[in-house]
Length: 135
Image (cartoon, rainbow, N blue to C red; front, top):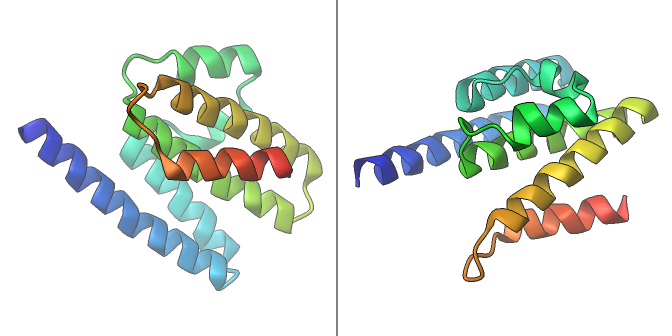
């Protein structure tokens, strides 16, 4: 029960952090947007987002997707942060960075979706996968 409460509190806190991140996005304050994404990545996943972004496909599989220390909730958080950062690259017209991050997001969201049991469904993951396929 304590673990469930901890996870719920962590997800609630992440929701507040995402609201701040999206606020910076709306204000077009990209410097603060990137700082908050960086801090959130470290706080909620213990992964440095710049490092994750720079990983090749094999290293991404090993350090992120196959990392037993990361929970499914942490992977969802990381996926959402990477997705927002990918959208920054669209705004900045950084096509190469965008394409690399899009591939990581697709891989991560597919992994999350495939990790669910038959009775589980995550609407956010579903919509993000649909959006990524259309981009």
